[in-house]
Length: 79
Image (tube, rainbow, N blue to C red; front, side):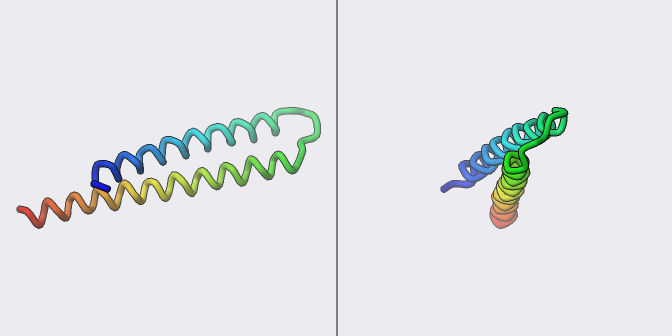
């Protein structure tokens, strides 16, 4: 895998994770906004999904950072 591919994969992972976080945050907000009783299983699933997507964003950001640092190191070595 080349560095450009790694950076692109990381960015795609961040994008996917952010979309997932937005989806679960919206689901949690909608559950909280309704006056009727909230199903705790649905709420728990949403919270776990939100956290899971947060971890995906963090891991993908680390991929981008590592690839970027590697590019910088390669440029320093060649210079």
